[in-house]
Image 1 (tube, rainbow, N blue to C red):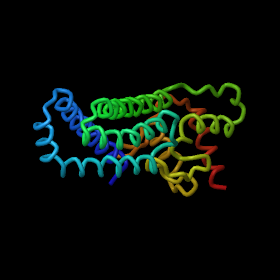
Image 2: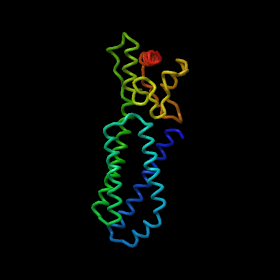
Image 3: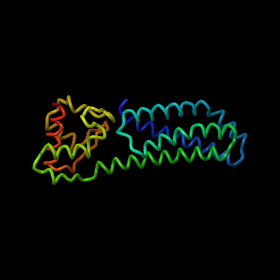
Image 4: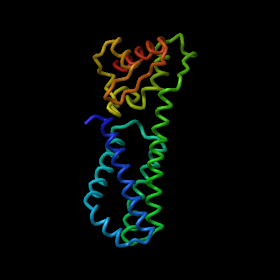
Length: 212
């Protein structure tokens, strides 16, 4: 399954997981113990499936996604901390622990969105290559560090977020330019339409050095 589809599945699972615990939290805070017990019994299998999908898709995205930021490390810590809190809180009807678990999940979701926004901002941010203008490879290295290294890695072969191995690519210069400028639908490849011709040519020149 393609990376972007796993991202979508993960977001759906996380949303359902959060909704499920919000409902349980409401019943617990409202003192509706019998309703909570009945709801928990009826949704036990679904909760197990969501939990497995939550962890499985999350682990895949950590493994196959872009390099982790500090925010993402905090998100992972919050998720793992919320699991025992939720188990103890709802099983023993400890309201503070249950609410803390739900809070941690919401914070983790929010941090994930912030991290995503940071990557999007970095993709759109202009690159200043004025100091390397006389050296195409130097220009390309600057662009590569700003736009490409998160997924392709320092050597071009990291393969994160489904990124292709640039060290063995057989694409022509024109094909590479088209993908860089317009992105590639159905993959995690972003479009960089704001790159100048000098930056684009420099980027291709630098990518060629990765093959050596």
